[in-house]
Length: 164
Image (cartoon, rainbow, N blue to C red):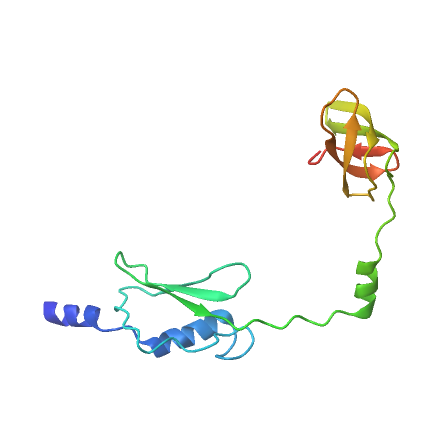
C-alpha cells in the first residue's frame, strides 16, 4: 500500500483538468474575453496535490489567475486572462462627465474652515488659494500659519478639513 501511495503522490498533476478548472473559475472559455489566454504549458511537471488546488485572482484587475497547491511543498502557477473589452459609453454619459461643476470658492475669497463632530465644532478664517467646486480640494492660507491648509469646498465661503 505504501508504494501505491508514493506512486500517486509522485504522479504529475493533470494539466488539462487545471485548464478546465481555470475556465470555470474565470467564467469564460479558453481564448474568449475573460477566459485564459492559452492552455497551461504541457512541459510543466507539477507534483500531484494531496488536496484540491486553490484558485484566486492575482489582482482586482482580474488579469491573471493564481492556481496554488496548498501542500507544504506545493506549487503555484499563474494563468493569464484575456481582457474583457470595455463597454461603449453612451453619449449622454460622456456629456455628463464633460460638464464640470462651477466653483463655489474662487481664489482670493474669504473662507471659513470648519471641522465638527457631535459635541464640538472648530472654525477658523482664511483665504482661498485656488478655485474649487463642491467636494473638490483646495489650499487655504491661514493667518499666522507658515504653510497653507488643505481643505474641501462645501459651499460658497465654507470649507472643511478632509475627513471631517
